[in-house]
Amino acid sequence: MKDIIIVGGGLAGLTAGMYAQRGGMDTLLFEKMFTGGQASTTNMIENYPGFDDPISGPDFAMKIENHARKFGLEIQYDEIVDLELEGKIKKVKTENKEYECKALILAMGAEPKKLGLDKEDEFRGRGVSYCATCDGAFYRGKDVVVVGGGDTAAEDAMFLSQYVNKVYLVHRRDTLRATKILADRVIANKKIEKIWDSAVEAILGDDQVTGIRVVNLKTGEKREIKVDGMFIAIGVRPNSELIKGRVKMSEAGYVLTNESMQTNIPGVFAAGDLRHKPLLQLVTAAADGAIAAYSAQRYIIEEFDE
Image 1 (spheres, rainbow, N blue to C red):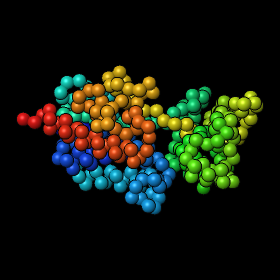
Image 2: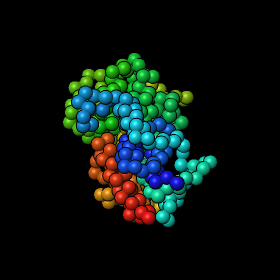
Image 3: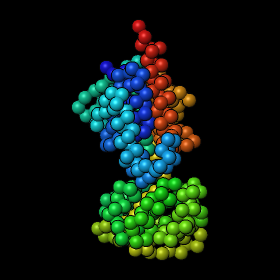
């Protein structure tokens, strides 16, 4: 039996693992794909304390993972298929094995939202992408579109403008929601054409993306634009399907906790972008992870101290 099991290897999960191991807890972290979460798909990180020079997302994620492993954190790449949250001993189930622990930290993070258009799923990997830093290099010298107006959309447009011929930025409003420093960079970039008050109505192409049809939400005017790639950056949704109906959540599916990261179930904690909070940032994910580990350790001492 483990002291603590962490589900999710993003910044919140890795930080929780680091603090738990450093606190003397026998800890196991599960990640189904790759550690780092959304940070590992970010082009450059320049707002994390202590990194006065920008660092790439993958490099940042690797540093955090290496730091956690130095404290002895065990990381297992496997997908969780079920959780048993009730009872003093928690159970974590994969396809082939069942694990037990005294405390559980949920850190499954969030994932990009979809537009819900025809061909969106069909063309994923054939012109439709949710990760500019992952797929941008495939469109060197070509025309692409970014959909969205927040920080991610602005970052994606700026990143892509380094490689592609032209970036169309489609946003439902007439101003960006991104932070001022990012918005100013996008506005000043001559390779980015801003298409305001508009939404993508259709994805064009037979076997892959060849263009999009855009509708102006104020005038109703429609326009077809030839592009080779479409990058969707309209926000995220929490990866909370595994625990739906088992812990208290917001209407949007984010887990509700107190300031100690405790859910409504004793011994079950949540951290990072999975948790309902006002700001989803790397620095808040790390803070959540540290608090969750501390709270889990205190819970174990109080409940299992013989």
